Image (tube, rainbow, N blue to C red; front, side, top):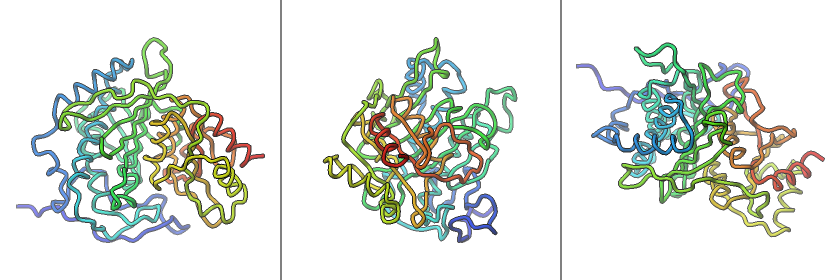
Length: 372
C-alpha cells in the first residue's frame, strides 16, 4: 500500500532576488491532496450536475456560444464551489512553513484552495496551461487523452486573495484570467477571452467579464454577477449587468505606507479625505474592488514607492480584475504611466505593479494628481 501524500517540506522564499530562480513556490499544480487537509473531504458526492447546467444556461443567455469557453468558465464555478466549502469548514489556522513569491506566509488553506482550482481546471479538459500565485510556473494541464485541435485555453489565477485577513472573517476571493490558446507569457490582458472573480462572504458570488469578441452577434462587453444558491447546487443571476457610473465618491486606497515617501499619492489621498469620500477598505483586493461593482462606482488604488514596493501581480490579479472593470465601463491605469493595465505584457509571470481602477472620472482625477 502506497504511503499517503505528505505536505511539502518547508522551503523559505520571499521577494525574488538576483540569485533566485525565475519562479518559485511550493505547489506543483497536480491537484494532488494532502490527506491532513483534504480537498476530497469538501464534497464526497462529487460535483453536482445541476450547478454546471445552470451556469451553462446563464452563459449561453449572455451570448457565449463557444463550447470550450463555456466549459472553462463553468469549471471555475466548480472550483469556487469547492473553495466556499473549504472556507466554511476552515478552523485550523496553520502555516505550511513557506512563503509565496510575494513573501506572504502560506497557509495550508492557500494550498488546499490551489489544489481545488487545479483539480477543476484539469477536470474541465479544455485548458492547456495554468499558473497560479501558489504554483508560479506554466503548468501543462491538458488531459492525457483529449482533442488536440482544441480550442484550448490558458488560465492565470490567485486561488485565495486575502488570506492575510481571513482570520477576521472578512470576505476573501479568487481571481481568474482566461486566455485563448496555449501559454501565458508574452500575453496582454486585452487578449483575455473572459475573466472571473469569486467572492466568499455571507454569499458566494461570481462576477464574470465577457468582452464582445466572446459573445455572439457583436454584442458589446458585459460584466455580470451570479450567486450560488440552494445549498450550493445552483447558480442564479443576481446582477444582469454591472455598470460603473462615471463618478462616485467612494475610495479604497491600498498600500497607504507609500504616502510617506510618495508626495503625489499623499496629496491624492488627502484630496479624497478633504472631499469627504466614503472609505471602503479591507486590505483585500477582491472585496475592495468588488465594492465598486456593488455600488456602481468608486476608485481603487494601490500605489508603490521606493520604500513600499508594488505587490500586485499582472498575471494572477491585475489583468483579470482590469478586464472586469473595463467591461463594466470603467477605466484602469498603471500607477505611473497613462496606460491601461490591459495593454501591459506579461513578460514575467511574477511581474508586479501598482494600479488604479474605477469610475472614469475618478481614474482621470487619479491621473491628474499622479501624472501632471
